[in-house]
Length: 464
Image 1 (cartoon, one colour):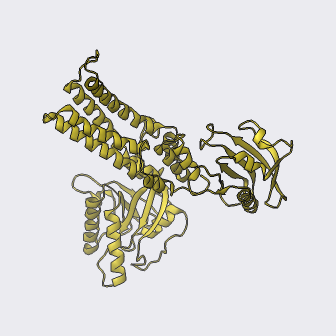
Image 2 (cartoon, rainbow, N blue to C red):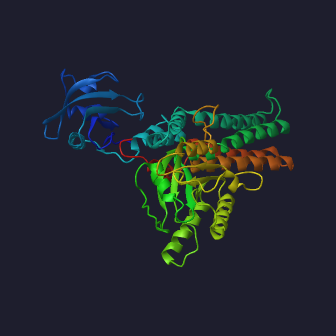
Image 3 (cartoon, rainbow, N blue to C red):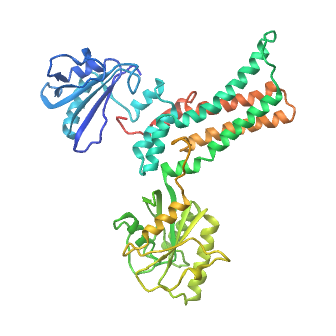
């Protein structure tokens, strides 16, 4: 991290403002080579975080923009290093010429996520906070924004730290008694160890219980739209997206492959998968589409089972196929909504027709053509994926890496408790406790392999 890096930190599209960012030794001096302050005073001599007005120069020394510049010195900066920013007009050509000038002045191109990676390595952020930066940039719903912002301010870190600190106190007490037998230290009791292990286990179990909601908020809910041919699946996809993404015709079997898009429905981010109509067919291409449809259904957390609401239900073969589809969806998906389509046409069937035993399935009636009933669908989805209330925003697991680390820690604690109940000596039990601490340290980044760090920051864009 001894090198000076530079990047454009705003999107490469015309905009009101664009930012050139520097971090590393000599950031202010490098900026001075491409910036001429109106006051004539160099940036290297100005106080931290003070905006300075002046001209931006290209690598030949020609004025290309009127800008504001600022410096922040280590350790009081985002990266923990000396930094400088040049706030330009957001013309892509201006930013490109300014960046070339910074390279010529001694900076090298920043790698994706390198600014945030330096913030992590310099102790300005832990790993969960660094991941929250990327989640915040990619957030597609207000709840996802609040979750990422909560993690960025340390909500998850504090929750993990509470568990970590309790286990450290446990180990410290044990070693203090062991190493200083002549000191007046309370003896280490098995009951104390058991209570501490149970408390830490409950904390980790509660934390792991947040993972499903956390991953749905940040990654979206896999949602399969399934039905028999011509039930209106592609029409519903287009209506939810607000544009013609999938081809719609009156010919059964038009959709031959899965079509995937992201969309917010009822405040819930869905990863919608429009599937081929499920039916027996001799067409080998359509057969492949049906197989992919079933695979999508098996991997979904939510299934929208579409049935033609204008169909009078007089075809026994179609009725049997619809019943089989409903049962297949219910067997494979934890959440299912029955959607009666074509509500703009005369109704063929009502809710009672679809009663499943003594309980009717969750059902909405809608028209993809007119949009009627789409709000009802959103309300049904929102009920299945409640936003939750209470607790600190962001104090949840949001990705598989975090969940795996927490699961490893919990498994180690359960192993420790099993050993304790079996009469294993405390020192052997605490070996498992140390394993739990290592897993929690990896969760927050106290101790994490270099390849894991590189993989995490590879998802960032350049300039962040």
